[in-house]
Image (cartoon, rainbow, N blue to C red; front, side, top):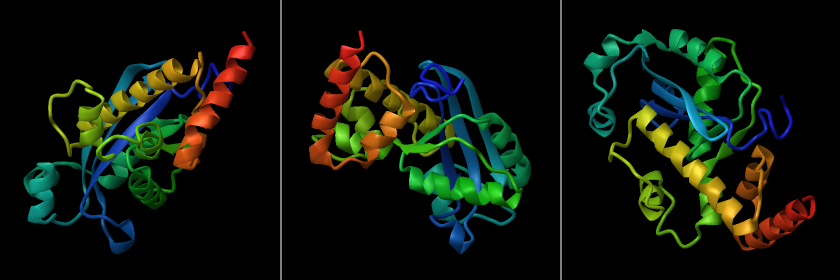
Length: 217
C-alpha cells in the first residue's frame, strides 16, 4: 500500500483547511472549523466538516471574515472531540493544504492537546502553484481558481469549501504536469520536490523526470 499504487500516489491524499480565531496558535489562537476531503485516485470519496468550540468568544472580524458566529460555536463540540474524530479521518494518508505552514501549525497544536499525531507527509499546494503557474497574478486560492478557470460556487473562507477548491486545484496541477511533461504517474514525493525547487529550475527538473518516465515504457 505504500508504493506508487498506494498512499504515495499524489492523487490519493487528504486535502484540509482550518478556520481559526487568529494567525498563531503560539499566541493562544485556536481552530474553530475543520474541513477536509479525501481524494482516492483523483476522486473525492469522503468529506469531513465540523465546527469546534475553542472555549472563548471570537472577535467580530473573525465572525465577519468566516461567517462563523459565536452563536454557532456555542452549539459546537469542543476542539478535543472534533480533533480526535479528524485524526481518525486522516489515518495514514498524506496531506495537502493551501498555505500549508498555517494549517500545519494548527493541526499539530490541536492534535498535541489530545496526544494524537499523524504519519503522513505534508505538501503545500500554494508552493507548488508558485512554481507551475509563474504567470498567475498571485497565488491566493481564489485567484488561482479564477486563473485556471476552475468551476466554483464563489464561497471561500469556510473550511470545507476551501478544502474542496484546493482539491480541485491540486488535481488540475497533476493534470497539467501529466500533459506538459508526459508523466503517466505522479508521486506525492514528486509534488514535494516541486514545492522546494527554485522557480527557474522547475521546468528542467520536470522535463528530466518526464524523459526518465517515458523511457520506462
